[in-house]
Length: 465
Image (cartoon, rainbow, N blue to C red):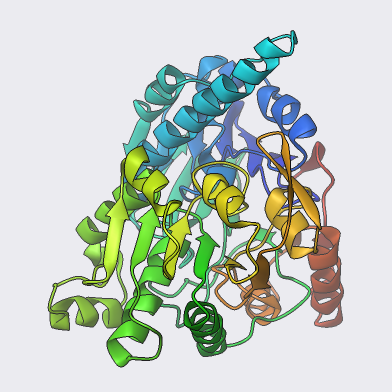
């Protein structure tokens, strides 16, 4: 067996790990790399392996940094099945089409400017037709039910607790009479988080590929993050400002709606209008409502007791689909909360809300998720005085706040516990989906706890078993 670390190696985004066994190949994830715009296009466009040689893809979850490059894979020759949990399939049907729409509409906007400047035009990374073709190749599989993915390799999905439908992937490999179990963590969730079930810890694995995003620090308790959220919302709304929250359409948006719902019901924050302004987030929330079997007990109880029979809906909340409704929000000055994609402030409607409100210090841009290096979100968190939005420079006067406790990723303490489940059995551990500042401290702790063979593979590294 060979493991090729093509994506999310020495970085967080662009998850893609290429496994070769018994003369066949499979790909664990196929995500978009996010970073400097000058680098992302070329990185995402090209593959370091022939897509036509891949026999199957096994997808851990629907986040774009894990699924978003599937349309490119298919348009470049991949013609096999894409295995995923049921909820992941439903979410990807929405997310890949939305990603394609963003690719096309952003290029259209950019090209209108480039044409006026006499510059050459650019093409989208992929199109809606590419996304549709990728979606047609999805095959649903249930949790805890093994299935053959390529000859001699059986895959099993287990709960990862990260987003709806997220899974760790167990690969049981039988090659030349040698049997090994490879456990791919995907993105590991946290215990006791709202809506989702807790992650399953690994067992009986010989090799572990594990995320390391927050390997350098534990997270504060979720309740602390809720208290911070309550403070920031109350302070901004009481001074008459808007709160703009860039949030990933899958997971973070629903988590925030759930938290704000509880705060307003309890009278902890002013009862102002709340808008979810992202067509994708609206559609994704519909999937959440349909997939209650993936909820934890608390969320199911809230649904049962809510007057609206919903954990993700209340009388102050409006889900916005149309462009005109979205534009109308920027013609208003009354206090409100706007939750809008994208989570790293790179694309989507949140950019328009930001550019209309960035001049006023009574407003708040509230960052509630990790920001990749060189993204607009990262620059704002780091205190940039001026930023470019759609090619125009804006003075940054909006209040920028950051809350880390909402992360859907395991912190250092859970990552250590996760890996230690395999002490005495695991032969090698590979830390992926993390920058050096997260992976290296985690590696040192694992070494100190008797896990000696911990690697932090470079991109393009190949490991032979």
